Image 1: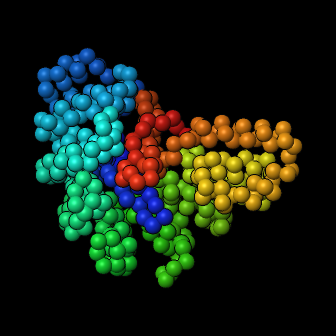
Image 2: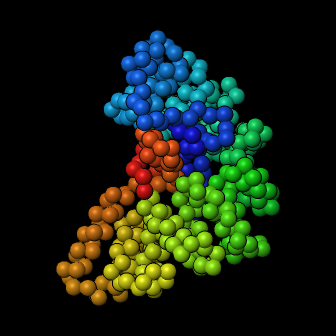
Length: 379
């Protein structure tokens, strides 16, 4: 569990997000400090049935802080605390059952814990439960119930609930499509600094559609969203700056954003970096660098990336000897192997001495509604 952590399902149409914790909400934040926790003391209190200590022990096993990382033990202690009625633990073990983290994936059990947590008034659990009703995950799909849960959470100041309401109306998911109403929900969420709503509005304002364009505001929204670690916004901001370099705050702003997104497994960013090196835009023209990035993009993105980069790879490959080409391929394979977990959002704890450098939400596998929360090295 971590302050600001959530789970993201993305597609070409929309993003569906399942929160575990979020900033600004009534949530439990995972604490990471340089000093090792007193595991013996925490364990003693946990074994006496103290829920907060059970949660703390679950945190320790989840992060590997003070003990060897053990997701099964993390799930065990979260569920113990949940059984004592702690709504935070109930929400968290629901997430574990949702994603199969430390336990076998079980949609019905996930919803059971979300319902218990939500019945205690835990706002984030209401959002999670709303998502379950949107997806029909562990319950029969019922957008009306989902909408009511989102409204209840929104009335408590939950920005993600507002963003979900925006999705429902903008895309017509379970309600009559009303893009103007969807935008109004996004605007309310963005005022609460919700990064998904900021991303949505940025896309609406920057892409050609039946809507006035506002590139500067779109970029501002993308930047704000990207600053939270939201990878899609990093890519969008970087791409917008490639096309509008006059709006950059520094010479390397676009490259930095695109590189960070590529490091997080965003194949489209890798392909853009390849195109920049191919054309000598923002960077010196460099066929070797261009081929490397295109090759990485294909390794990250599979068939979709291959279809886009195929001609460039063929055109660039003739510039190198077979030995040189094999060496670049080897470098690209090694790089992609280290960045083989596509990430949707990265949370860094920038406090000096923090023991956990970063947490990230991994992109879920196709057909899943949630991706695991994982500790990752800093980019």
